[in-house]
Length: 279
Image 1 (tube, rainbow, N blue to C red):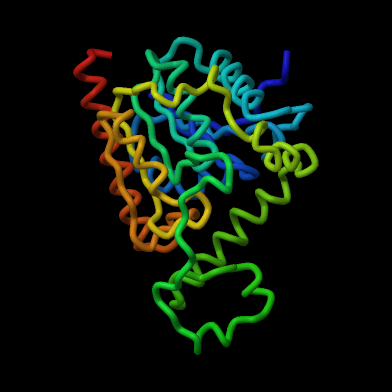
Image 2: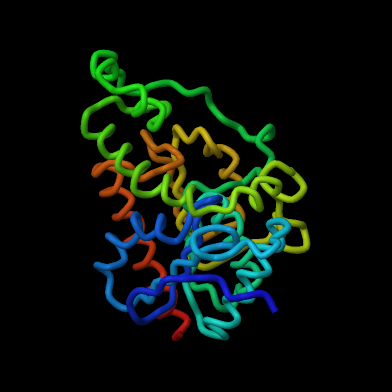
């Protein structure tokens, strides 16, 4: 038996499993979701580390089907037959869709943030990068090191740049340092391994519990148009495309405010759904 995945649990109540993106870790999700979830009583947040990421060893992980299988084992061990909510970001959202199908009678709500839809890079419908708020004078004062850290800056204002730099330094760099790139790199570079099989993810299956899908209009990693197909598969979904939204959303306080409101609305809709089912 493979070792159980590492996870950090916060709070008590209805379990909510949060799945991070590729080469990230549970702590990355905590930074965005805890300011929201810690204001909502009755949620037992479970931030999991996938194989080769965070504090979970890769242990010869082979592909996304393998990661899905180990996550399923974790759910069976940690949650059993309990009902739960499910959150996934980017590649974690891709895996979450498959988990929601497998545990369809237990998952009472699904949240997909900047979801990966098309695993093959060449098949993704992406727009060319274009700065929305340009400030050449401000950018000229930024060091070469910080420019390399920040990459393309969509909104060139002092507050946005400060928030973006903080997220890079406090979230993405630590997660990248913790990831087992030797084990994960070959998976990411192989289109056949960085894709769930049809036996795991039915691309035409519907899911009827309350769903929130949040995309970034300026997402340079997965885009947003590929996710439009999810609208027919998730009849109880709220589908949002945020202007100024990148793959790292939320970045600044403005985005965090909107994102928090959307997540709280989703939790409320889940509560109504559960009341209707007399769970």
